Amino acid sequence: MSILSVAFLPMLVRRQRASLAATFVAPFAALAVTISLNLGLYVIMGRNPADIVYAMLLEPFLSWASFSEVLLKAGPLLLIAQGLAIGFRAKVFNIGAEGQFILGAIFASAIPIWFPQATGQWIWPLMLILGVLGGALWASLTAFWRVRLNANEILVSLMLSLVAAQLLNYLLLGPWKDPNGFNFPQSVMFQYDAMVPLLISGTRVNVSLLITIALSFAAWVFMQRSFVGYKLQVGGLAPSAAGYAGFKESRAIWLSLLIGGCAAGLAGAAEVAGPLGQLQRSISTGYGYSAIIVAYLGGLHPIGIVVSALFMAALYIGGDNAMVSANLPIAAVRVFQGTLLMAYLVAIAFVRYRFEWRRAAAHRGQP
Figure 1 (spheres, rainbow, N blue to C red):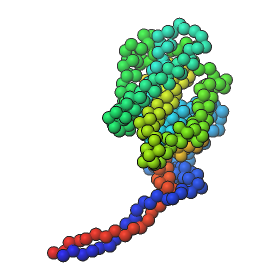
Figure 2 (cartoon, rainbow, N blue to C red):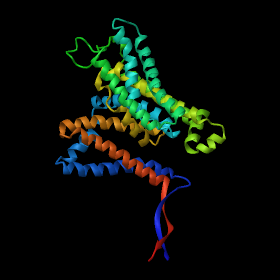
Figure 3 (tube, one colour):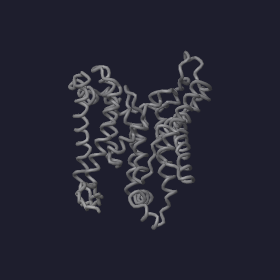
């Protein structure tokens, strides 16, 4: 004998149309929640929350010297995030931008390392081109395994990032190690013509920022005004409809991953040919992973990504300030970034979905 029991369970139901106002408010709500949660963490740690908020969120904008460093950090974050967002909107999840960033830096460094005496204004543009090729090559490995063997691009791209880091270690501890570098794992310093020209005198901001802004505009045109970009978005939103219309999934995978790889590789090349001036192990600073936060915090929209890149760059500089002035550990800064991403994902989920109580019936046995 059984008894029919009825229960009401909450279920997430997709809204027919997400509110534009709620979509705009979601990042600010996520930021408010993140600040509130982390303030509690700082109190538990015995730190002064007011000092940390000032150092982390306000100080980067209070002087030209600090803000110029924000612009410098925003460049690679913005460039990588724009490339990743194109793939994310097509539901191709490239999580290996960090490895593609490293390969771009390695490819770009080959010229000044192999030809340290070379001169001419052709060197740094060629380095940027080689960086693009390096990032694209590394991303193509993920695309190949995804298309040919249906391997998960998240896992493959992430594992390849670890391989790229080990390749960097091998080069800097072996054939590319500076013989006069006091045994530090770094290459020789690059010659003057291998450096991207400065954009703003008295700062470290260079011409690569203009390239990044131009490519951000190109990303907007590509996704909002081109037929290829439209096909990528349709493939992400309605794969069955895209297939029926003749849009090939394999082409979308290759295109999405190559765009992300090119952007990350260019960012890596601009980093070694810009503020660093040599190939170092510290080139791998987590830009590729932070750019994922930037892309989602910007709503995967090219304009929103510009704003979120500036904010995330300010967190980088503000986090350094807080570590010095408020004795905040680096782990706390990363917790802030991770909390921000989680809070945004929750907020945007409620923008796109709503709770609905549905009746669920179950038969329960009775002896």
